[in-house]
Image (tube, rainbow over all chains, first blue to last red):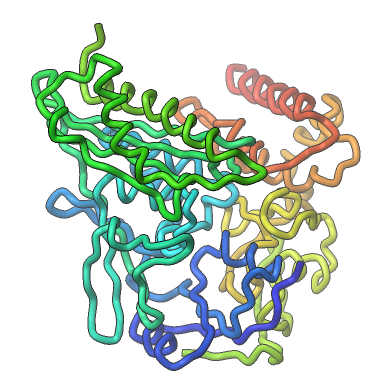
Length: 290
Length: 167
């Protein structure tokens, strides 16, 4: 349970990192290490070189501008949780981050690390999709923006090219008349989610205007769908509306069948937790109940 | 930019329990092994070595982290506090007493890690910021106590602190 030997590189800038990635074979970037070092200890990963991002300037800021919160890749999860826990409009995000591991891992596990790792059952990749977030990627030809939906491709695989680095994630601030909710099912608190779901809706005069519903742990990546057009303008008091929305999500599921849970159980959990998060998001957005 | 070869011994300087240590280590040395094998501070226990059990929890720059998921080479000039460092603190006696009186341990293997987390949470606890103890204890596996004694010890400590504050 010790990592296999590796060269260790300490870059001084993002440009250094890109240069290393462009010229070194079999290299891994080390952020908080809460997944990577565990995998290396178990020898599931044995990179020949490790590049630490600790100390690289420009990766640990949280900034808000033009209705978007930008979170540097090296911001630790607990810091982001603390920031959003004082913002009701980010309710689902605060709940979701609180479900990542334990305080003892969130204290050093990073937001960028979790997004780039792209574990299909992880909370942050799901939440980035539900909040319609995006990422900034820097490579040899400069930096570019990418929507969350295009970024996650397969389990543990993103659209990052081998010589590129994710430097920040962007989280649009939901409008005032919106609300969100997050639920997760795991055998023990802090375990990998068997299923996680999240929903964000915005309403106007007790009518649904916009929304996003997603699930993790049920496909190669987290999946999310917009509010169906025919629900726009409706009031989400009836279960039928929630069920209808859920049915648009179900075709995207390809749940694994393993020792943790059968694929049937995972589908059932998406339906059950899905109805709960839709109802709660509606109420938190200011929607009434009958 | 600095590059160290995998077989190279690299000098690191870490402050552990207020004392500065300089050692030459391999890049792959885990912080938990640095603490135990290089410094001989065996109060920090190594359980699962992949971040699940929490036995190796230490304070790094004042926050609890799992030392088996950190590389000794990658914590900079970090300040580390281990269970041996807490023992030096006068207030630690109350915590030790509460754990003993409430049967908060049996075999004791998980205890150093749990004590570090509980110590930190109590330090940061205030009326306005209630500690989510489920969250704190979820980061530690204890197979002897069923957590009942640990919760009782925490309650006893909080009652004591509240009582002192009122007096």
